[in-house]
Length: 349
Image (cartoon, rainbow, N blue to C red; front, side):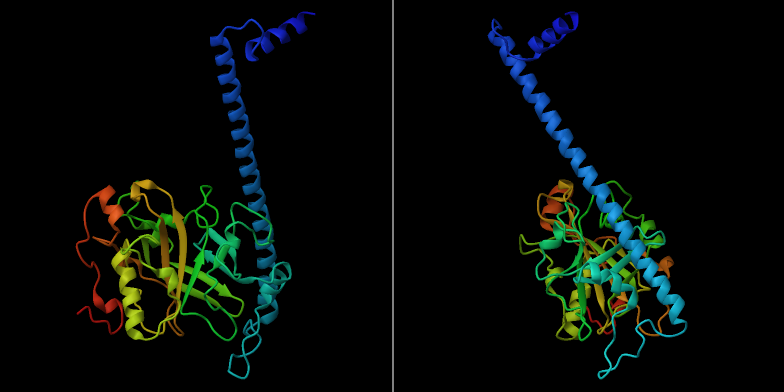
């Protein structure tokens, strides 16, 4: 009986009851609404965390499959090339064997991206016929808030042709997953010393393996940029091939103008293959507009030393931002902070 009385007292304290004053009724309704919101929010938060944990586990499983297949290839190939043949017009490259198990899971696998000695980015890369699908689906094609790393559908990445600028999109996850750590390259972040480019110096290269070739890339720029909302946009994601040297040179110059760091040791020349990694930035401290943090790298050329001399790197004294950035943060662009010989044969005029 005593337990029943205690229970009824709790119920009457929470639930509107006959004889309650108007103030009591309002108080109880507000309490119930707040408690319900808290429960729903808690369930939603828990659901997100459980989904993220599931994504981590599934990506770890896929990584194990890829690494095991790669190890088998390295053991079996000896000094032979992984493709098993030399690439010629009559004898096109074969799919690298380490990708075969992945293609059995998803035939839209097009590559694998790794960055950093500790591989803080180490994921499969996918591509379909639009740029929306893999924003909300994982490599198993199951719905996922985390999405996947995906190549822009307009890029060509086949045995016959590779676009000169391959653009890869990924979510900027708060957990650090996918492209969540990519903005660490931004030395102009509001929480950092703009002259501190240590993260770039520690991680100046990346590896991108397509189905047909594994390559090292030297990172040469990173920028905070506005897209799809005005004349001061930089449409880096819409340029995938270059009609001539002038177009290539101007594209690279636009990147270097905006890059928060510069490294003269990583030169650029017409014919280089570029890899562009793009992720969202939601922080309104950089302006209330659609923003991206974008990292650029170029493929190591045949016969070139893959090592980067990071001692030559420096913070760009005045990277070019967009109007909303200057409106919020102040300042203005003070001109180019790099020398024209970084781009072979480029004339600043």
